[in-house]
Image 1 (tube, rainbow, N blue to C red):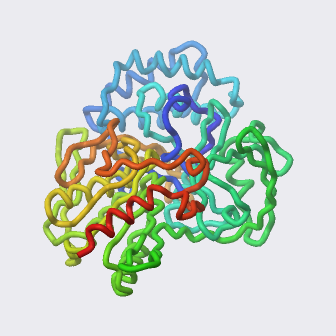
Image 2: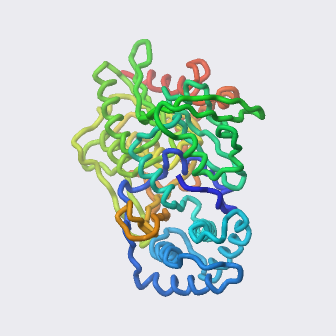
Image 3: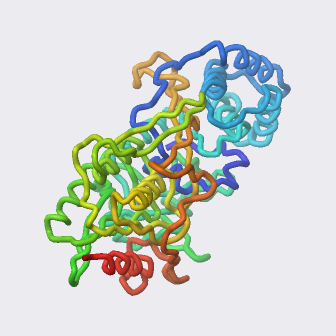
Amino acid sequence: MRDNRFGARRLAVCLLLLILTLVFSGCFPATPTGAGTGPATDKGTTPATAFVELLSESEGIPAFNRTVLRRMHVYYTNFYVGELGTVEETVSAIVELYNEYRSLIDETDPNEVTDLLCECYLAAVGDKYAYYMNAEAYDEYDSDLTGNYVGIGVQVTNNSLERTITIIAVFPNTPAFEAGLLTGDTIERVGDVPIADLSYAEVVNRIRGEEGTDVTVTFGRNGETFTRTMTRRKVTQVTASASMRAGTPKIGVIRITEFDDTTAPQFKAALDELLASGAKGLVFDLRNNPGGLLTSILSVLDYFVPDGTPLASYLYYNGERVTDYARDGHEIPSSVPIAVLCNQYTASAGELFTCAIQDYGKQGLLDVKVVGTVTFGKGTMQTMYFLSKGEADGGTDDMTRATTVSTAYYDPPYSGNYEGVGVIPDVAVDLGEEAKAKSVYVLTEEEDTQMQAAIASVAERIR
């Protein structure tokens, strides 16, 4: 996880939840594209040189690692799917932001200066889904994608300007779940130290630790605080879990919390188990799913439809369109009715799943209804590039730094991009006010009106 002391004003208004979490999410290729130093093409070389020269001449900007900033500008000049301002406009915005936040850093430390300038760069270009990672943040990101870590089992969002860290998901059967933590709780203190005195990375590192050791954390909820002491343990994220609803006919439910390296095999095993156990209909719960790896979502979608069916397409920065197709030889019978549950916190790859399954229903490949509320509306894909590589990551630089760049818009199989719009459910159902204050993991059947509607939708279509 990255140290987010150096946020910029865009972070205060963007919905950071669903993007940077303890299990770093988004819609990313599984393997970083542009690994290593990255291309410095003719297209980007001259603007990047002018950019660095202007920035180094700006009053108040100390010396910094020019290679890192130049490389970032090369990536954005060459690969950014959005519109860049002029070099002068970008530099002016960086300088303004740097002067606003420089009091938060030790300007005698060149690494802190570089970190802040990289953050300021991303804020200046306006790529609202981009993230900068120093070595510590990259190590966290790399380990989190495996789906295993030692901690308490929460997914959080960090707002660096408001200095808040908020839980957006509590994983089942974890210390946090057993301690009664809920979506919306805020982290106030770790031990005796307020989070205002710590960087985001320091908060994460203090909560994580050795298996079997205790950590005491103070949380906020509805204006009050409470403290829990939890014993850290290995958290293997179960990102796809199955259950069978009681009654006749049998209806299977699969909750997909995100798309990481563990999701596709867990999903396939869960689906096969439900169908083998006699499930006549299926509900896929994507509520609060913030997204994840592109390869993971493609593997999951491929399990639904016949070979040759489009899974998703991507319109890149250079105008090139690429489409992925099903090819694994597996499909779900179209006679099995399906409901997909979504809400305003279903984002990125979670939305791609929701909209793709909805598309297959419209094409007659599946029998589908989408139930819930309009989704988040993130239809852009990010690619990670290395700005420098330390020895631990196979490079020769002093430390590893990486950035993500929004490089493409991704479209569902048959419908248009939903960036800024979201996916519209076929059956609009919201939760009651009391239920909204709880994690979807702990809602009772009586409280969960969305799940009730999804099951009813499936039940009435079972033949």
